[in-house]
Amino acid sequence: MIAFPRVTTAAAAALIALALTACTPTDPAPSGTPSASGTSTASETPTPSSTPTPEVPSIDASERAAIVAGVASGDPAAIGPFMAEPVTYILASSECCGPVSAADATGELLAYTGSSSGWTSPLDSAYLDQVRASPYYASYVPADVISMKASSDSLVVILGVTGDRITSVLVGHEDVLLFE
Image (cartoon, rainbow, N blue to C red; front, side, top):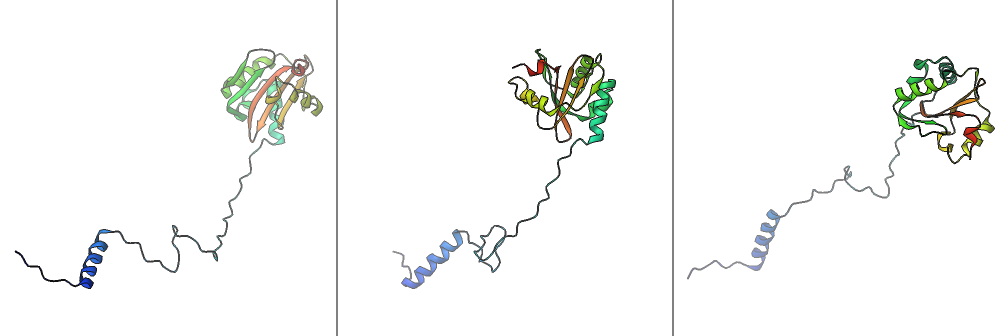
């Protein structure tokens, strides 16, 4: 029989504690200043950082005038750069078109308006409100629009603007856009 030395209870407890300490991870000792992952105390109030709110760019008055002139003259260079990608193009009382590329929307717009003349802009706000009330066309006439009408044939163009882009193009004759 092998004889083991007699260990006192206190010594055994110390050996067990030492063995357990080697097997378990230790938490770092708390410091006076909490780290980024630490919890803040009630006396600490974080200072909110001032996040600058960027201004949403918009199409200014001179650019709007150039767009209207571009429709009147058939100049795609005056309109195309302001088109969103894609843009929703709607030809009233037709199945045309929906979301299309900026180039396609510009081409469709100029092809359809090419024979019209005597453009005036902007349209009366009461008329725009009536179009906004239409169950068919309301979603294509947002709060910010570039609008124009040809005196030669009462063709109306309403360009929906979001920020610095034309996001929708609605083309139709004045009375058709009011169809309910």
